[in-house]
Structure formats: C-alpha cells, structure tokens
Length: 250
Image 1 (spheres, rainbow, N blue to C red):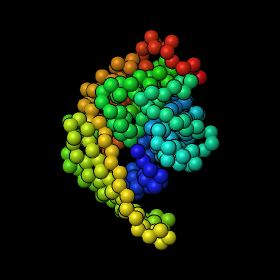
Image 2: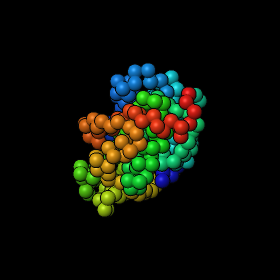
Image 3: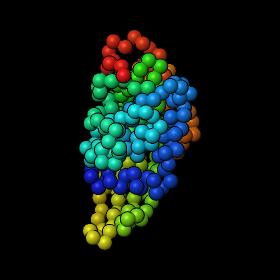
Image 4: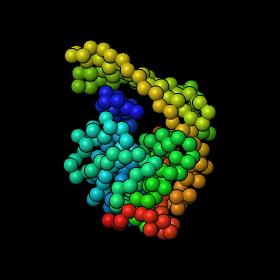
C-alpha cells in the first residue's frame, strides 16, 4: 500500500518518464464510444491520485473514481475538481448505488487482484455498475507469458526544488510479480531520505483475463500495443440477466 510520500511522488515520477495520462484517457474514451456512442458517464476504479480521472472528467459529462489507498484517495480529492467524486472502496467488492456508461481500471491496477477468484470478483463488480450496453476498459498488468523476470528500471527527476531517484526490480514468484521499489528524495529543507515499497502483483494469462470478462457477462476484445505494450481489454455488457442485482440506473 502506498504511504503519503510515495503517493505524492507517484504521478510525478511516471509523468517525468514520459507517461501521457491525457493521451491514454482520450484513447480509452474513443474506443469506448466506438462501442457506446452516447457514453457520457464514467467510473475510474483504482484511480490512484486521479491522474487519468482528471482527463476523464473533461471527456465525460459525469466522472467518479474509486480508490482503496487512503493517501492516494486524499490526494485525488485535493487535486480533482469538486464535481468529480472519489469514493473509498475495494475494486473486488464495492457498491455505489448507481450505474455508469463506462467503467475503467488503468495502469495495471487490476493486477492487485490476488488470484483468478478475485479477478473475476472485480470484473463482476465492474459489470454490476454498468448500464445495459456499457463498456469496461481494463489496462492489464503484464501477462504471465510476457513478463520479463528480473526487470530493472531506474529514473531521476527534478521539480520544484526536489530531486527524486527511483529504482525498481521485478521478479517472478510463482504466479506473481514481486516488485521492490526504492526512492531517494532530496530537497534543501529536509535533506536526503530513502524509503522503499514492495508490491505483489498477479501475473494473469490473457486467457484468464478473457475468462473473467465472459464470466461477468461481458464481451471481450484485446487491443495489443497500447499502454507501454501491456495492451487494453474492452468489454461490453451483454447479459441483462444480472439487472436485478444492479444498483439503480442513472
């Protein structure tokens, strides 16, 4: 789980490495509207600090977020416009009492589902918050078959009088990736300090993702090449048999 300082520099580090949150949000919105042209409401699950959500809020008439990390939730509420409500909740089991045209889960966050049962529970939760014909867009973590065991990444950035260095190492442990990340942060007031974090992220196969979509009553299409090579899953709600279990429609 991200602490306060990690949450504060998370978006900064990835932007400085070239991640274009705005372009990614526009691509998801474009592809969602190919499937549902009138899509005007969106829920961004595991929205973090709101890096994608702030762009979704400009692309849709109504946008909300869901986040489990309290430090990230606090930053999202501080940074996002007041009209953009962010809820505290777990992607594997939440109920907001309304439905949306589009539900998104970006930047590999779906990988925090521990095992296929939790993955399928998350997709069912997403589907339960869709209007009939609504669209789910999931930016997956690396597949079990494409993960690079032992991958090392490093980056240094400077902004607002602060220098931040980030080094990570990712290794396979069974069906998971264990990613250990070290940060060195320095500024004139506080000096230099080090902190570290560890993430255990599931390495699902493409087939396991597709099974989770279909078991939730969603069609499924995989678009390769997007999101730094991880791709994008898109599903449309086809099974109206779940309607009686859904929150009231908007």
